[in-house]
Length: 282
Image (tube, rainbow, N blue to C red):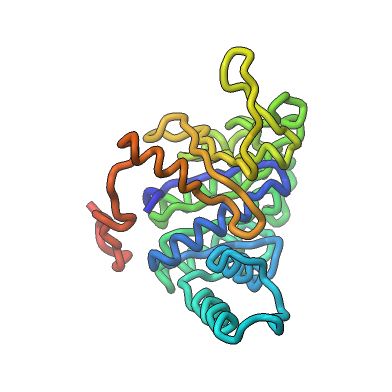
């Protein structure tokens, strides 16, 4: 519901900062809206993603030994695990080569009708036999994902690392042209999201006015829109932990409502799902 069909979305962050959490959180949200989705995970096995979704759903660390827990609580957690397994999300690892990844996304689009795909992550993708240099190779990889999102008419999120030079800045915050190895991801993307966790980069306070410094709240995070043709440049405050990933802050959300800054809405209101891929959406 938050992305347009055909959008090519780049989510860029430092290595280990939480890109995967960000994408899994979006996959879980979409799956709970009954939106068929696909995750190309080039790093971990599918069950790792299921565990992370279970953690987010239950708000507790995944564990194998539940012997000290009340039986009714155990059954609730087991039921949540079964629910996660039934969600319309598939996690696959077709290998690092672009041709296989593109074929897998196409296959799931035409066989399962997926409406959303995530690739984790760009710097692990290669073109088999390519000899034109890594920057040119990534340029072609980005162009292919851009073309694929338009061809299939679905949003595709590609996660990407940002360059280490970001760590030389006082706030260690990345911007839209900081994607490592290739700036074409920035040029090709219709939307660039830049999640930020100051505690991860050992930044503990911020300037909120001339000469006024305050400490970041515990677990503070935000998501900055570095590029968005319909959104402009803006940011959303949130929180992060290693169970729920990025999540909204009720107090902040309630404050927005009090200021009438958030309209009443239903995530699926006004959205017509196209189940026939041959239909002309216009």
